[in-house]
Length: 356
Picture (tube, rainbow, N blue to C red):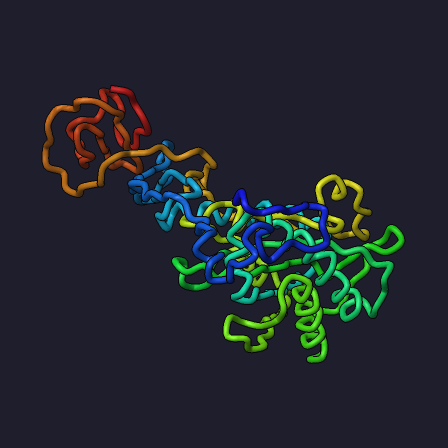
């Protein structure tokens, strides 16, 4: 945070101007606050060829393998980071059972974008969104204005929109449509009337009015946009995890980190009531592990080069392993050839693995 700022984390609002620079405009703040970007890199993703060591593969499988770092821009590494983030969120929200999720997207006015480049201001805003805006709204429209219902959710900010090079911060809130009342789980409504969306926008605008006068740089009155939907089926919830939990390698981690509130806050999740009889916690369905053989369950072994067809003789083996399956002998030397002349002695047809 800049030295010119004087700010109290326990305050009910944050200042919109630095104490000793009251003459600065919003555009001046934009020049003062640096964009929260970071250095990125693109790893050399390699294509790995793998086969079952017990000979159950009809053909080798090819998968990509990268560094899996958050600041890597390779698509495979970005997808891996998003899956890990999504699995963690699903493990927490899934404590409410196999129920649908509600999603609210809250935009921030452009006048606040320079201030949100500071991590302290960004954290202050996000820490109050669920308890002061989303939870009261959900109690009124999803739980028939029952103030005794306790809810929990996750706040996931995004530093940008579709154009990842432009700073456009907005906040996504995801919560299960299920709350706790008197030590028992209680279902809420997925569908809400049109008036509920207007009420959500009014609540969000009223919350932001304590931070900003409701006008843009030209003095025009603007109103932040809001969006609500629900993800009821497993497929829709998985899509929500992929979209809202995706990584942003060009932006610093605090601009899109995940935080839990309400009954899912740290230290509270272990005190949740038991689910109704016959229900279990929801989790992301496990996909097929490309390294695991579907037939025997063995972990596939890696071969570094491509498979070439043909039975022509090859050079004597230099290093590696002799691999073969279903009567077809393969040997691994400098390149990976199909070669029946270099089968190990006594291996016969259909040998598995032998060291050279």
